[in-house]
Image (cartoon, rainbow, N blue to C red):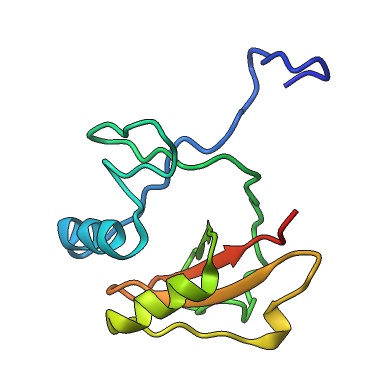
Length: 135
């Protein structure tokens, strides 16, 4: 995007999708829809989503490769997804009621960055829940 707000040709404008392997794609897709409201047919906006689309609410996206030997997430996983959320405490409570434990650590939270919790999907993929600071 240029300084005057116009979209330039030949540039990347955002993430168009996230694709990953799963032992049970249909079951995992249903888990994400049920517990996080994420995936095909879900909408975080006032616009309805399509058969293959998730309408995510706007905001910044972090794109950051980590060192190969990071201990920030499991060594046997190539990625960790981070979802921007609102009402982190309420979401964590709802997940707990569904039998999905969330890990919280005081050192993860920072007033300038936000608050965090970590859960895992049924196939062991780490999911970081991030509530940006208000404002």
